[in-house]
Image (cartoon, rainbow, N blue to C red; front, side):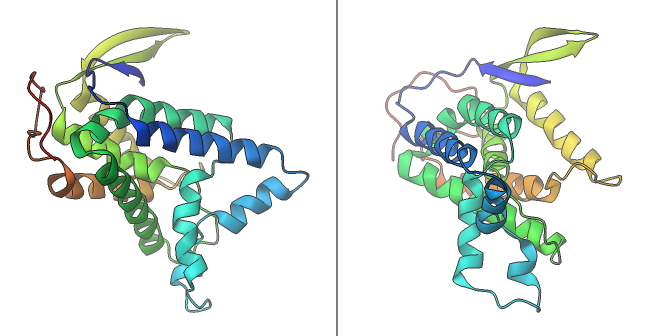
Length: 231
């Protein structure tokens, strides 16, 4: 089930959402121009490696903490980037409107931080670099589920070889996504995907939303027409 749009218009220009997308695309273009093994080296240098923060073999340093944030803007391939940016494009603007620009940026970074720390706690000896915006965007999904569960989302569902569009409530889109994360953890993981980071970011998104949303934004929409949000 691939979301492609939602029926949840905003009344602001989502500057932070756009800036995050442009930053991720810009960093990926920088990665592409690296020569030889430098692309892979960039993932090791700027990706988040749990053991560098958690293992007694290493002395935790400011650089280890810094990679939690640099890793949010790195991606391992085009499909990785495209999938993350699609979700951020569809769901990020509404959460930015609900929180305001500055608080949304803080929310995004804190969700990404929680995602990385969850992965580090669950797999503290891992030497595999964790990269991508998925953890932070998982937080956005958690916030969206709380604030707009009944918003209609258009998704593409594969039936045989054809992708059919359907409109479903956001809670079903997020629910299916969440179930897929849990199912991925029930068997041996050969995908290289940081599933625990997704769950950590999602949980952080749910926990942070009540504190960072604007006071005029209700839980469990749909949103009704009203004046400007109170900040």
